[in-house]
Image 1 (cartoon, rainbow, N blue to C red):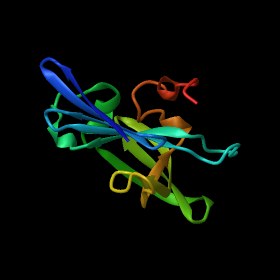
Image 2 (cartoon, one colour):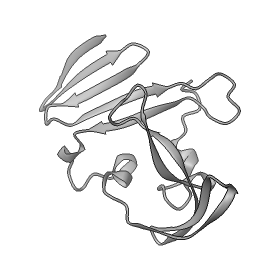
Image 3 (spheres, rainbow, N blue to C red):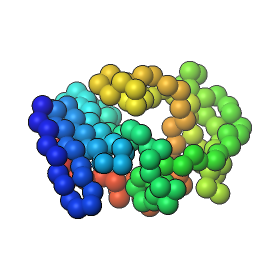
Length: 149
């Protein structure tokens, strides 16, 4: 583990690097970010390794927070309608109304790494088809950094 304190007047940052695990950035106002590399099996047919960006103590952010973080900082209002059987009997499909958009979604399970950054906890969620089009700001390709791995 490597730790350092960076002072950028008037803001101080604490940076903790846990080799091959995570990077933690804490600001002097108490807001903390953790970036974790989640690696999947090599040559997995569907999933890719990704960086998980987690906000700890997010209550310390301003109500004006926007951009990549801000679009999910505040609760999102949505409605689920027309739940019906999907191609997998264990995963129903439905229509989600969010941000004035009508989206196709599928019920499934996902890992939540908020409480357990290393292993995660399985939680039920709605998977949005078409790479999140209609939910995320911009296009999904705006969030991909192809040369990072």
